[in-house]
Length: 134
Image (cartoon, rainbow, N blue to C red; front, side, top):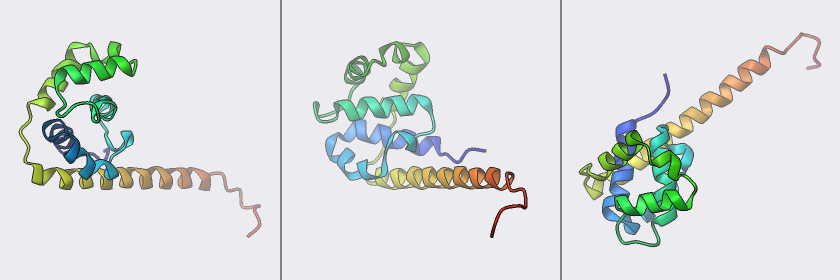
């Protein structure tokens, strides 16, 4: 089971699109591409980052333009991705809740990182032969 919260990911993206640069500046410290677990959300976040300083409010056309600029146009111009982008853009969200969602998905990213680190350590322990020096 992957540690994720798809609803919180959607809320953060919807909030940034709805409220623009001020919202983005409030949450950008918590976000990076790896914070998002859904591929569509990762791509949408890349497009938002690319265009946030150029427009007052992120809309569908600005996302598509950013995708083209980032050489992601072929990926984005698929019906399921376009539908997802429309869905996120139409998601109602209060400005006051966005920061909490951003913090939540960042904590989940940190937990996933810890899981990966522990898995690697576990695999490394399988290599122990008993002949190693202490």
